[in-house]
Length: 269
Image (cartoon, rainbow, N blue to C red):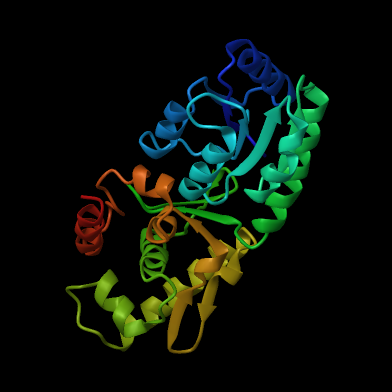
């Protein structure tokens, strides 16, 4: 579950021990380690690194771990904080910044594994209703787990892209037809075609057990944004990592997305 970690300790030997323990606890994980807390914060804010958990020493020069944790949580609200320290008197203060765990040095591999397993259970609960990951920045792509979701036809995928773009707003069949077939007049034949696309979209989502992301009615259709993990939605909520991940491209396959692309670029200037 957890594969990306941030490790921060201004004592280099302690940092090396922490990194080695993390590698043993989670083989193959990505770890970015820093002895300078300011550089660790820059890695999140400027380089768009988005770890699932951060292991922080508390007593550090320049900026202590409690302050760093507060700044990291502002950038990535979902980030799990685990403090690693030799000072037990910091335990209550650690939990005041909503730390998920607290480990005393020297840290053992088993202690790290226990913390990660606990975090994994909480993460599964929090993401139980978000089985789809939607990428809007760059090309529009949809993933179920680690695999791309297969759509029966390109227009079916574009329909879903537009619904995601509308962020929960109900879209009529006529509105959708104007987006998918901008040069064709709206008539019964086109209406029936859109209904087929809606049906195919539901089948594709149902195959991944994700049909509940669609809010469907006879005359309109929408997505439930609360059931989608989406970079665009996280950008709109002000999440720093999502804002930093935007590189000036938004749903590049679709011409109707160009105005939103310009608006997003304007926001980060």
